[in-house]
Amino acid sequence: MQEESLLMDIIVNPHTVPHYVSYAFLASLILVGVAFSIRGSLALVPRGIQNFVEVMVESLLKLSEENIGHHWGKYFFPLIGTIGLYILVCNFMGLIPGFTAPTSNINTTASMAVPVFLATHYYGIRVHGVKYIKHFLGPIVWLAPMMFVIEFIGHLVRPVTLSVRLFGNMIAKHMILFALALLAPVVVPVAILGLGVLVSLIQAFVFVLLTALYLAGSVEEAH
View 1: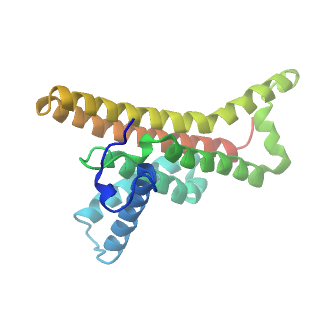
View 2: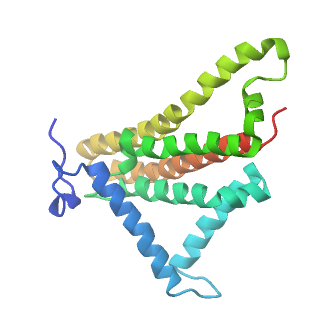
């Protein structure tokens, strides 16, 4: 199957650097550029792009604190906020003609899901030490061996579900937009584009919400 021609092909050879890599770097550059732009023109009364970014950042901070707690919510906010904004930019890039969403490739979504999985257990061990094993044993002693196996498998599946859910929804959105653009190139894609914006927002929200819940479960006391 021949790879579609995109805007970044003018700068980067898609056979040397795949689309999901080049557009992932572009999304990173967009976020860095916006950050430096806002930093250079900070205003006490935010407006324009600063106002929009502050709303997004405050929403992610609120989500983090509500699900992890005030202390750990602020501690994990840089990770959760970065992932949330990055996924959002990547998802929206797929709605722009000549661009593609890096999150429609399993390699991009897995590159975010695996660090979340590792961070979850790193902080679980760091906070609880050896007692972290209690998170896998359940409240009933004689069921502990079975619960350990179930919990162990459940934790191993987490990065798979995180990456596949985001990847599957993004690739499905891309295929639907492409198919409907061929069938009705004017009317239908406009309506589907609105649906694409909604899907992009929801999938970014679901990813960061699950990340927050996984981190919350690792640092809280086992019951």
